[in-house]
Image 1: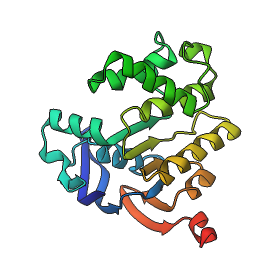
Image 2 (image 1 turned 135 degrees about the vertical axis):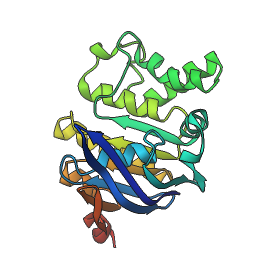
Image 3 (image 1 turned 30 degrees about the horizontal axis):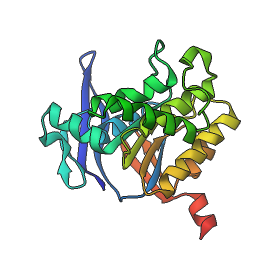
Image 4 (image 1 turned 120 degrees about the vertical axis):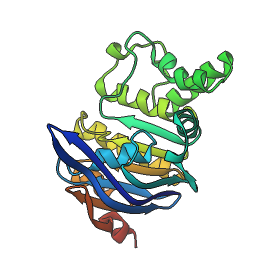
Length: 231
């Protein structure tokens, strides 16, 4: 479970205080699928990276499975992320001179997986996202949609139970974006918790729950229209 308790995050910019999050309290149970919506600058990305242990709050606490993340040192938070959290970004963040298979092997290498098992696991994950015949292709040899699927496979490498996604369909055409959302729905059915920032209203409603932010505050927290339809 992810939990934020009275979290505020402020910055100093041009001698002015900027409030990224304002006394945010949020509970995300295990297995939930939450979309974060709101205008640019509303605090969505700040909330997401804070849940991922990468942005310390000015005040308040962030907990993952009962562990207060920012009471850990940087190494402790890194170990927590490696064990539990997978990230997906709009810009994919693939290493251009590595093949698809090698890109997926990076988190496996960092977690101490044997070299033989790294290759097998990467090939298995690429097959899962429909790229079993693209193991040796570098990012420039793949379409934009294929690159995002490699990023999805890499995110799954260490079998995370929490997925944090920042505009995962932002650079994709509608058909490819639909494929990505379908993968998220699959991952959620497997029991993974998903928190997704999106500007796409249709993608947002594919989650179980929609949170709207404005000026750093959570101003709405409701079940998605899909959830109502399912009921």
